[in-house]
Amino acid sequence: MPETHRVIYSAFRMAMLHWMADPQWVIPNIIAPFVFTFVALTLFAGADGSFGLYAVLGGGMMGMWGNTLYASGFAIDFERWQGTLEEVVAAPSNLLHVITGRSVSNALFGLTNMVAILLIAVFVFRVPLGLANPVLFAFSLVLTLLSVSALGLIFASSFVLTRSAQIFTNGLEFPIYVISGSMFPIALLPFWTYPASFILGPTWGIQAIRAAATSADVPLAFWSDIGIMLAITVAYVIVAALLFKLVETKSRRDGTLVQA
Amino acid sequence: MKLVLTLSQMSFFVFVGEYAHLNVAYIAIGNAIQTMSWNTVFSVINITGQDKWGGTLPLLLATPAPRLPVFVGRAMIHIFDGMLSVAISFAFATLLFGVNLGNANVLALVIVVFLTAFTMSGFGLLIGGFSFHFRNPMVFANIFTFILLIFCGVNFPVSSLPQVLQPISYIFPLTYGINAGRLTISGATLTDVSLQLGQMLIVGFIAMFVGYALFRLFENMARKTGRLEAE
Image 1: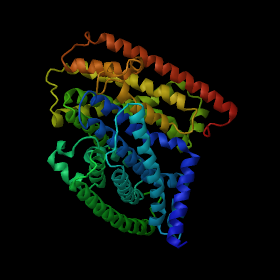
Image 2: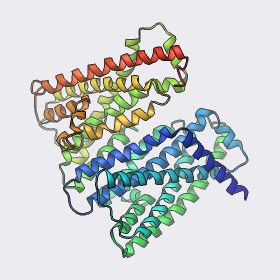
Image 3: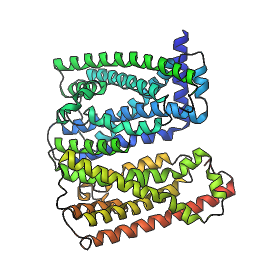
Image 4: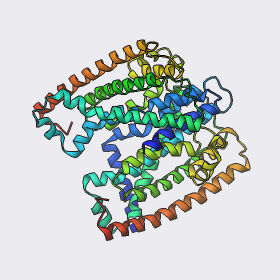
């Protein structure tokens, strides 16, 4: 196995083992999306049309995002608390590869969050969730998951520099839910927030997911949403790689890794 | 971060309400008052957790200081922090979402918010006392901060919940506080909301003393087993 793959796999395996050793962390990741979905379904009760779909798919998206963000933030804080951050950074393995392995692991857990929300919605709240195009639904879901993970990489690199990653983690959760229009069309937002919405992969991802869920013959807009999301995701990865290099160099030079 | 959190939570539910063509002022006011939970519940529950992470819990419990003032006193700062969150949220509600506070009985509203924050700290202490026994109170902090959005009439009236769930709403002081807050914003006096305030104080004091009893119980258990931080 090439060295890069071995590092990514080891980081992936380590993150999986951490989760299995302390599964209570699933609760903080899933409780907010579950509650938000419950509230939205109650608010949408009696309304016709796509309201239920917006609530359920939005809740699932929030589950993925919440998991990724928490994992990004706590991955760094956890290393700090355990006193292992210096060792991870000092190891000859590329820090980006280590974090990528963890992100893939977190993405998988994020997917389980989404599935959990969908199952709760269908079986507890009796929301009819017929998927018009299951193949493209799964396709857009996986790509959105990758986009969310790539966004998490950017946050993870930035969090190395701060002592308060946990605070940023808590603070960034809700704004992304709002700006990405996870449970309502972004047309409701003030126009000055549109640029922020448009640079978020999840904004395009949730639109594509909704399109695949509602129509068997997806409109052209579905493919443009997918294309834009892919381009944004590639940009996230490039920015994350540059940030990791920058942050690592700065931390080593200033000796501020732990006290940052 | 307080500004971001309060604004984004309120915005989220206001936009969901707007999409469903509901009364957004009702939602904005509910969320404005609920934001105090981040201080009075989430932060208060995490007090013990922070002691565990910081390694200061054994030192604290080794002191001869009487436990009740220690237990209650450390939550008190969060009452005023919670009131600040509510004030910021009301500013957002007015400036961004056009909520009209022109008819509000301001003095009554301030007293309602103070008493709600005080009793919600009692609720935070209850869960904090319970979670003292566990290694990671953060899990309980997340659960009990978020479920308030379901049960306390924040975004929709308690009567919209399934009937079997409605009694649960009345074990949370916030349910009475939000109800009283909405009434004072409509111009009600303290006398008008005295019933809600009385019920809220009773629930809050019960929560505080049960929390204190749990704290002492688990403290004694931890001393006997020598597992103060590893529970």
